[in-house]
Image (cartoon, rainbow, N blue to C red; front, side, top):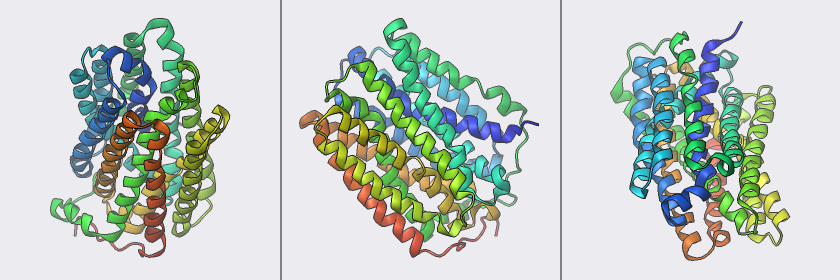
Length: 394
């Protein structure tokens, strides 16, 4: 029998993968259509992340109040509509507006998927393993988007290609409407939800996500630019961008299998190790003398990035006892909002330095972010004790 709530969770993060990879996937053609440079592309990514930051602060607590279905359906609908707006945009202002609005749809599916998944998978007992398995589908969405772009852009053009990508986002609406869901927690307290930001686990989880989301947003948005600097064709650059997302997806699947047999108290060690690998991978990209070395660094980034986000979410849920306390939406809203600041700032800086200097020199910014991620995730793992946060219903 099909577990429809789990399918809705998987579909939600799949559509999130589309939302977060669509700009990078069509970036080379988007630059031609709108006649913009890398700095403005970075601003488009930052616009998506900025609106996402505002939206997730509202959507997380709202879902704790109204439940999953409304948020999931709204997310699928808005994601498709906004990508269609991006498809027909003729000016930079129109594309900027589409990216802003896309942030709302992205955060609806993001919150629905990343909160529903750890609640219904593994009986809610292993949030890091559940989040990794769930976010394999984020990787699939992020992988299939540049693959569609590589296959269709040269054949049917920019508008029709982006329209196809947008249409995919509408598909899960029917399932979301007919699914049953866990109930929203009783006695939800908005004031207590706001107070979660003062908790060490929430704050450190958010700062760690600041570093990670900044890494993923900047690398996902500028990998094609980096590979083009090695004189690759547009098609090959998009193909290796898909390879980056494939590696991310595979790493999450492996992490889900491994972490399923590891006690949650030890899951944060994986983030520390992966941060070190990420720093090495970015170093390889910066120092690459051949296209092959650049591709190796790119794919290694995907492998190291893969388990970071879902494991950080799972570790923060564990440290805060979020699932048992009924505060998953509120905790996720806070940590993701802080994380999205990284998605605003880091790609904007990468875009500016790429436009002024070179894409390779701009990669020193993600390198610094990976080192900071190592530091803050280590503090979250070894300094902050688990289960210190009361329920919002108290």
